Image 1 (tube, rainbow, N blue to C red):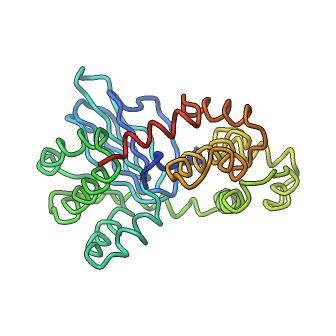
Image 2 (image 1 turned 180 degrees about the vertical axis):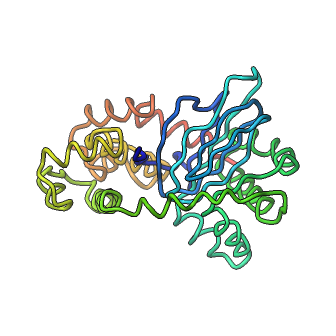
Length: 286
């Protein structure tokens, strides 16, 4: 079965995405994305399917999955005190901004290994569990520093095994995924204006109806939903910068009417733009 292409945006005010849930995602969902993914499951047992690798864990797991390796969701309901922490980091953040610093270039070794998938042993999992479980409660600056500390520990430890999961990764550099990458680049360059379906069909070499079916099949969502998510993420990022007014942000992210902007923004964030700006300012004080 071909994996669903998952689109991931960083959390507002952060350079990466982090999710923290009591049990994680337990429904099978075979998916793929270009981000590096760090997975910490505190305890319990379940199956883990990463690329061509298939196994089970009996007391939680700690994994680093490289870009474009298809995998299923991870989590379980075995223990009432279980916790699932998912950190997804795009290639620019890790390969350019983090390891672009001379002091952090040693993390490149970890990134290279992750392209086969890495499972870490119980020793390093126990060493990092407190940091990972508290990470979600830190302010953005502190969260970034702690993440770098986690990456340092994972890079230097010998308590790991390679999953050899990349064999399936190679098979997914296909026309379909090249099209998705083209769409991502096009939206990134044009999200501030109206995007016509005809442009996307021409870009991908499909008819308009075929394009709509293709996008829904590969991403699990309509293009309108994807575009709105992209625009709202951009709006969230701009709202952290006081030099932009809310009206300027509305127009810069492709919205032309205040009521619609507020309605769509609240649908995806549960806040109005004004409420979100106030909240992010409070949380980012260090």
